[in-house]
Length: 334
Image (cartoon, rainbow, N blue to C red):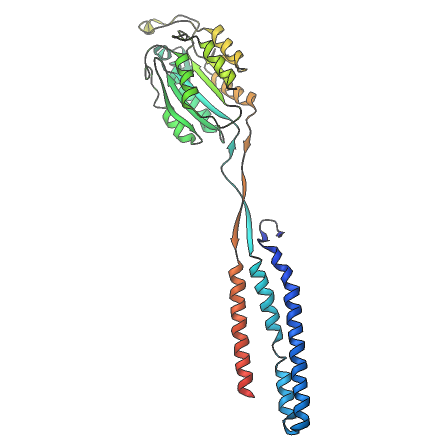
């Protein structure tokens, strides 16, 4: 049972106790009626045998009627206390995401090639990725996000979490050759399946790779098939350049991006493939992936109760004390 207001709701946790209210009041009336009849009968008997006591007895009968309202209030207050009045307030916990997203970042030496620009300054692929990805995850509220880096080996940098500041901080720690020099994407994808426990029904993995030398010891399509079986989408983002590196990059390993393989992996898992043809397109690509997934934010609702039955008990004790004082005062006047 509750009474709703614009912001506060007054509820009774055990409203069935209100059934006792009319019963207790009826009992009180019957007892009062019985006592009145008994006193009046004694008064009539005493008036026959002791006429001189007539006036005093009549006053005693009247005085017994001076405080019945105290008992009625006590009964009502006691029943309200048993019904446990409380003030309820709707609360919402941290939003539960229906989407888990893991970003897999390529840190092979090919990511150090400076073939993109950021604010009209030539930057490496990894520098562009870090800048855009940091800004992106800070806006991606409500979803659980994880991050892994890979090259020769694969390492989990951040497990699935909603702490966007933690993710943004770890993105800045990524450096070229952090996990080796070559790109073994199959190993990284297998590591995702082993180490990440997805709680949502439709998790997604976003691979940000330079897109070359990604076959490794295991065919990436075989691993992509595992993702398909597990209902995990692979979104592939290729940052590889389609032109030869400049003279300053001649010491770096360079291979052209394998668009076809990345596209086949994404298509196999019902994901999408994107190629970052220019610097400004990476942010729009990430937004397009989120938009295509129709990620929803869902918050669990719960009710916070603050009990107030103790105040009814305080009132009962106070009224009983007042009743005792009145009874003592009346007896002292008799």
